Length: 148
Image (cartoon, rainbow, N blue to C red; front, top):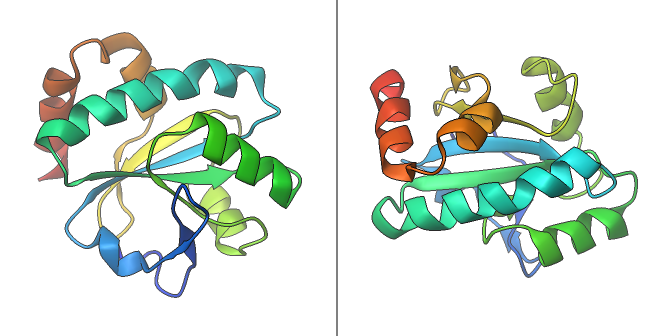
C-alpha cells in the first residue's frame, strides 16, 4: 500500500500527520465520501461499526477516507465527528483526484478494497458491507479469499 500512497500525507482522527508506511502489510479500504452527502451520512456509521468489529481480531485492516468535501473545515469536522479511528487524506492533496480517476469513482459513498499495488480486490465494498456486514468475520474471510 505504501507504493500507491508514497509521498502522500495522511492524517489520523486528531488531524495529526501519519506516515503512509503504517499501511505496510495492511488490507486497505479506500472510502470515498463527504459530509454534505446524505447517503454517505447513512453509510458511515455502518462502516464505522464494521471497522471496529473487524479491528478487534484483524488489526491488519485499515480504512482511508478520501474526501469529496468542498472545504478543509468540512472534511475535518466530518472526519473527526463521524468517522471511525481510521486515516484520511487531507483536503487539497492532489492524490485525491488521482484516486477518483484511477478507481473510476462516479458516485459517493463508494469503497474499494485494494492490494498494496493498488489492484482492486473488492469493487463495491460499500454494498457488501450494507448487505453482509452483520457478519463481519464472514465478509472479511470472503474478501481475503480474493486478496490472496
